[in-house]
Image (cartoon, rainbow, N blue to C red; front, side, top):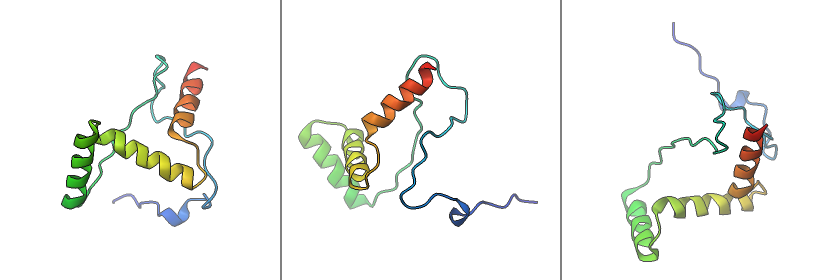
Length: 95
């Protein structure tokens, strides 16, 4: 029998509540580097093309532009910045 999936409605987080620290699924790397999780992103072709052109014209990686966009989105919602989160992750690993 297939396992029943948990719906998003079942989660107890409110719109403004952010978890302080999400526990890693595996043992933390003791090198002090934050774990990196791969995330697939599906973009319409025209959006991908514009991202590619912007990255090329600014001589940066597409990843850098996406991270900049995530940081702006976090800031607009009052969440911690990427640099704050990675500093927290490094402190967590040092314990």
